[in-house]
Length: 231
View: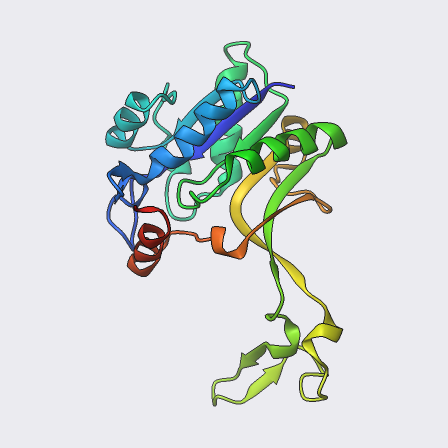
């Protein structure tokens, strides 16, 4: 199975300037995902590592770090409203025009860098073993569920999502849920092209720790990440 790793890294960021290349412990944030991908390639588990970006600055950094940046992403699939499937299909089409075909795409967002290499290896092997359409990473959530969730009206009156919210149902009796954390997406190319969707109706699960599910979106997230990995 030939696998294309795509690391998406737009240049624009509203919350944090140059978020994808912000310095984290002496490395640009994107390097953590690139380094993980290079290890996978070294072990024969992936075949190509592409950074899809609209930024020449990010492209040059990614290339120096060992990733491929053969093009800059077109503007119509780079804005705030652009969907991930758009740049994924754009990358697939780019390679197919050069007669380079892949069986699956591994999407690694640079803003979710806390991935264990052993877990990534197990993820790919699980996907291959099951001949799956898609796989996603999640963390197990023991507390948050619809028993403790509400919608708020304009006058601050709460509407419960679960009619048993005030019936004394114990969390243990309700059960846990799995929450998608955005760290790992692995999808077959045939499914991507057929449905234009990254996640199938019943994706395979790869479970990650909640503490490893940090997604960098704010300055506070950056501070938490630095505490987690800076020595």
